[in-house]
Amino acid sequence: MASAIRIDGKAKAAELSEKIEEETAALARDHGIKPGLAVVIIGEDPASQVYVRNKKRTAEACGFHSVQHSLPAEVSQQDVLDLVQSLNDDPAIHGILVQLPLPDHLDEQRITQSITPSKDVDGFHYINIGKLTAGDTADAFIPCTPAGCMLMIEDHLGTDLSGLSAVVIGRSNIVGKPMASLLLARNATVTITHSRTKDLPAVVRGADIVVAAVGRPNMVGGDWIKPGAVIIDVGINRVEVEVDGEKKAKLIGDVNFEEASEVARAITPVPGGVGPMTITMLMANTLRSAKLAAGLAD
Ligand code: GUN
Image 1 (tube, rainbow, N blue to C red):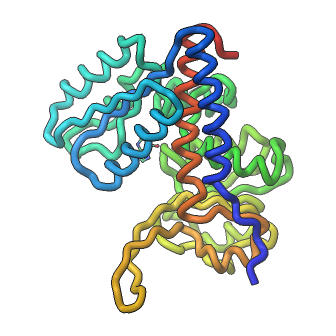
Image 2: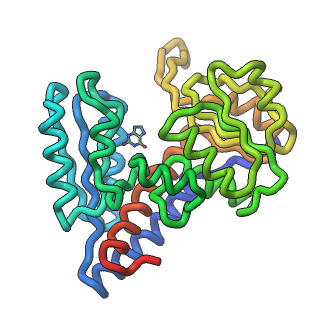
């Protein structure tokens, strides 16, 4: 019988979104300012199309000024850089996001680094990465997925993780590395693991906090989990399952939810865990950027 608490990311995201909507309305009423989010999508990647549509819909629901630039897959690097520059210069835009992955001919680092750090609501600019790595988490724009994961961890373990062991599975720039920096800033003892890690199950078995971000369906089994651990599953894997003889697409995480639920203290489901929190943190970063631009944020 499952015993873990199911961490409801959807409900938490809705709660946070309500606060963002209220603050956005107050910003418009008292200062005539509307947070502006520009999302740039290049090419036809179906998963990216879904993510971008959700970002736009959520921005509009929050009362933001929301713009989307859809560019063809064969767009030149210079045209993308020119677009980013025009958004950097546009005072109605407070957040710029270029959806990744990019087509192969485009230089991801150059494009990401061309976004001015004060509008880098993804937290990918080296200035923001540097602030986060230096422990200046209050000043940096924190990448949205790890920021959302951290809020869910804090709900269960508080803001001081002293004495707790955290294992991050995956070393990506979007999730693994910034997640480790955030956990470290909260005093956790952090291990980053990856495909070259020796005896991964044994390492994970030592963790009070597990953040799985590898993109391998059900990789983390129940027998990898320390009893009482808090599990955050960042994986969103589309798999085919057979229901009543029919093949259907289903989203599953990197963690075997049923097995881990038997052992863990709390666990995020997929879908309905990390995903909704990620989008909400993008809105929170954009609102903060708008306030900072107006000299109103702390
Ligand atoms: N692709 C997958 N996740 C992300 C993200 O958080 N930001 C951007 N820009 N692209 C992504």
